[in-house]
Length: 223
Image (cartoon, rainbow, N blue to C red; front, side):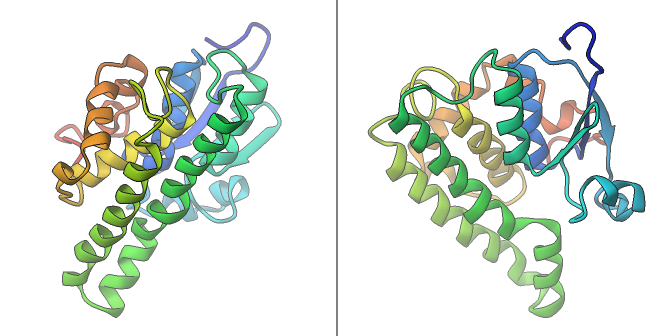
């Protein structure tokens, strides 16, 4: 819960945004109370002047903590890690910390940006609607293959050991989207499939699921 005497955190989020989901998981793990403010990306609410004051790029998530505004999920997670050290997301071991940064960046630099709404709409318009899913699948498969190799000698119950860490917060939303939105065959990725099963047992992850958000459509099944 929020610490006494401090204003409640505000999270600007979209239910199906994997970037927002990372932050929701972190807030849950750290036991932080927050106000959920939905931003409907399909309706273009991210382009509203008031939201652009929070993030000039017009992307979710954005976090407001009193007078402090942070946009970009990686920046938000690092801020939460430093201000709210309970349930640390990064291990003290330097090598494991670097591994977490590397795995996180495989997702946030080499997979997710290539499947966001703006990119997919551009491909649909300039190349053709039939090329959208193959485009996304090729980049997810490449990134997942890299994660399998990167984590094969260090994974425990979770991505980099037996404790949940930052890499897990990036990996699970990406796996979920790969399965429910882009029809990825996860039998190619046994390690990631095992991790996905482990995350399903954690309330902090389940409460952050897209269909459990207040702005999720009533009939949503994370599709």
